[in-house]
Length: 330
Image 1 (spheres, helix red, strand yellow):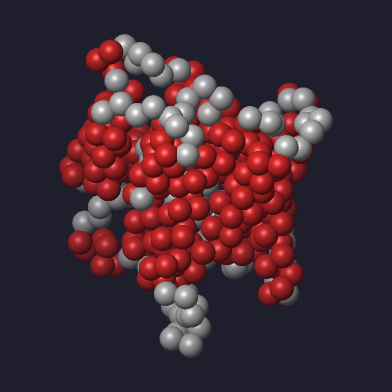
Image 2 (cartoon, rainbow, N blue to C red):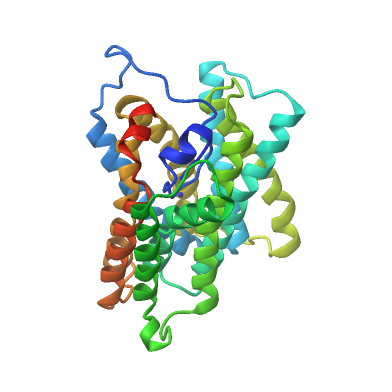
């Protein structure tokens, strides 16, 4: 799943796919520039793509080691963005400093969280992974409190933080001693969401105003993330010796759709309807991930899972609220 940068780190911090950052603030589009396909249709498609990403991971894990699921995801996602770069005749960013910061961003926003989610889904259902992903804005709010950032938390946002993490405990069935859930897998999924929040904070502080386009920065970030995984995967996981059709198609869809194409759709939405509306896609993703996991994979769903997920989303929504004066300036 995705995506975060300086301008988007605050506006779309709940983005599950984290495909790549955007280096610049979105520019207004004219009526002539807007895509012919209505934004609501693209919004729905993006929700479905990211919601199904957790199912794709689960199916990919059936045939490939998690690190190779992630590597395949990065390869196909990068291919989509590079193809668009070539079509638009855009160049990758220049400068060692920019590439250094992008390498760190690629680790925290792509290589690490994508790998953690893949490993997590070896032992936890895709439904739980999708819900844990929704905790990203909660981690972001917590980091803002700990780091005493300029994005000051209000009472409502701090309350949202508490409500959100209470929802996580409900999802996990804390009163039952977390019975039925694998602690290690759940911890990895939550750590993946934390990694997104760390990455967004880093990008916000280091890659704002570089002068490069969203597409160029994102393409470079995914290239670096792919290189990182290409080095690590052979060292820590067995290379695949066969390529069953369904898992292979799942990895292709996870990368090309959930990482590459989804970023392009989201960037278009941010330009057309603004980051606040585009961010709302986040709150549909765990619903779709849960529905897909239960309906297609036959995953079991206890009452506390949807109830806890709803509480998490309410808390996440509260952490994204801003004072009216600040929102007006933004």
